[in-house]
Amino acid sequence: WTTPYMRFPLEEITGSTQPYSDDANGITTDVNMNWPSREQYVFQTTMRYGDREQAMTAQAKIDLAGRKQQAAARIIEIDSNKFRLLGVAGKSIYGLLNDPNLPAATALGTAWTAATADTIYNDILTKLYGKIAERSGSLVTPDSNLVIACSPAVMTKLGTSSTYGITTLDMLKQYFKNLKVVSLPECESVSGGDHMYMIATDILGARTAEYPFGMLFEAGRVVPRMSSFEQKFKASTYGCLVYYPFAIASI
Image (cartoon, rainbow, N blue to C red; front, side, top):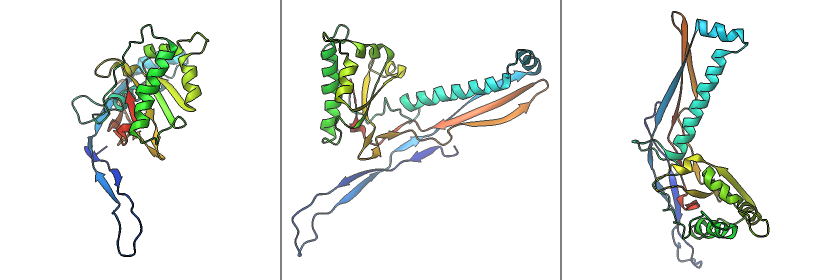
């Protein structure tokens, strides 16, 4: 947590092959290295409790200090998740949902307000998976590890049923063998309106993105006052580092 800025290595392989010859070395294969910089954001919260307050809750068999420590840990966890998804405003820290290198979102041709299950399925298939498959050169297939992330409101649309009683989600999981669907309220906070994302979590075994940090969570010392106690909790984040932006698509 003492490192204000960090540079992370990104690499791209280049080169090709040609017919063998004893008199030629052939075409060169190389690795292009890029070193994007990310700022580290350190954040904190503090909990306090008094002697009388603790004594009163002890009458009800409640561990007040323990409960407040758990609350502080949960608050740190909630904000850590927000920073990983949306970055930190005013700093060179970006999240998984708003990294500047992500491909632009594809607008829907028809709103899902009254869309059928088939329409929603086809939009996801062509405008999300289709984009990733094309950009990856078919490294991403229907058998790849895929995640769909959307807001709770959009999640209900995946329950839209066809005339045969099959929901959009049923059709998706039948086609994509390793699909995980998650509800993210933060998808409503992305610039430009409500978004749905599809993410291929790895490319040839390498992670598409990760969440670097200098300090995941640390509880400070308990400080006694005249008739109370205080304790500080802190953590840090670099947001999200996206190694393969092409493996993420949104609508």
